[in-house]
Length: 131
Image (cartoon, rainbow, N blue to C red; front, side, top):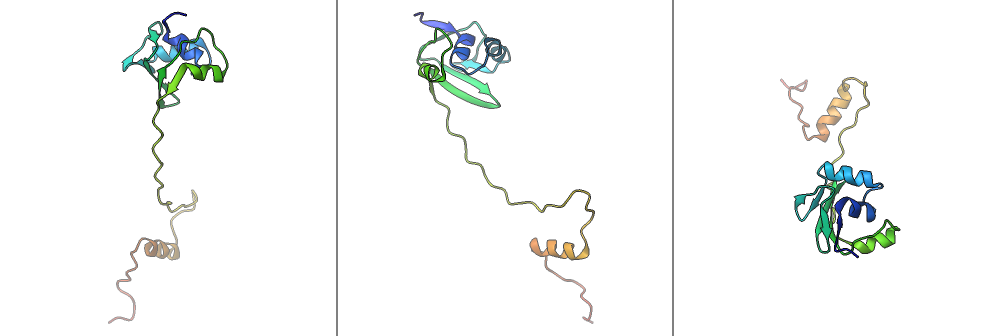
């Protein structure tokens, strides 16, 4: 077994890209990095290298633990890398916005008063009967 393999062949062999052409396109677009530097498709990958691949808008980090000679099953491919990707950050929930049907127009006087009460602006300046 050789001690290095092309990065596009490795990305394809460990099933990070469906086709070898897609793996090459990822390299050309700059979505593949080896040990921090952008990789060309023909750049060799060696055991212990850190490969970063940008897939679907997320960076995935892998350590090369094996060099595939052919594209095999997913379980076989998993033997050739160690996933170092940190877990995703927890999503922060936003409070719900006041939803209004599109085209419903301006709020009525009653709805506006309810909105004011919701937002804590329950002041009633100039009420009738105060002279």
